[in-house]
Image (cartoon, rainbow, N blue to C red; front, side, top):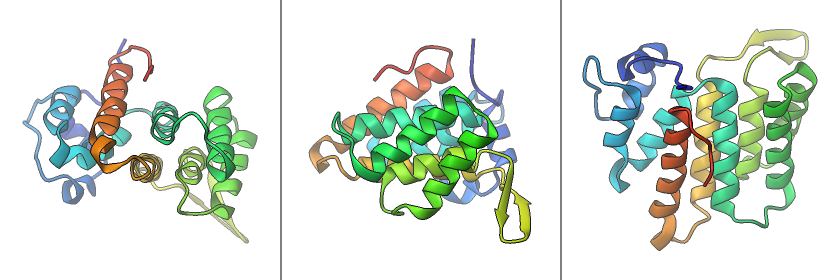
Length: 187
């Protein structure tokens, strides 16, 4: 069973208008999201494919895909803030309650912005609920989970040597496409 939030690629762009400036290729009027994503699956549009996929899945599934991708791209020995951020994001995926979301958010706001695990935690932390700063509370912008997941995957891909970067990113995208279609997220 499909995990996609949208029936057409155009609906993704309607829900997240900023993607129109981030992704050059326009989808066909009734083009399916995975068909459109397959068109983006090449080195010159790989970053656009990451951005699109991160906005196509529901928030929880987006965070799960991002954490699996970051782990895959960083390698088996993930340590430091990356390990903690990924752990907190995965905790929220397993148990998407308010305490898990807040723990991920608090970590993400205090951790290094250069660490992919920080952005995975922020993707979980900004997945819903209120964002409180001092006395003020606001709802998270609709696209912030997707944008944070995209940053996590993009930063992690930068850790891969250039000669292997596209194949490694492509593997994450292909796994995400299988997952979106209802399969598992094995990488």
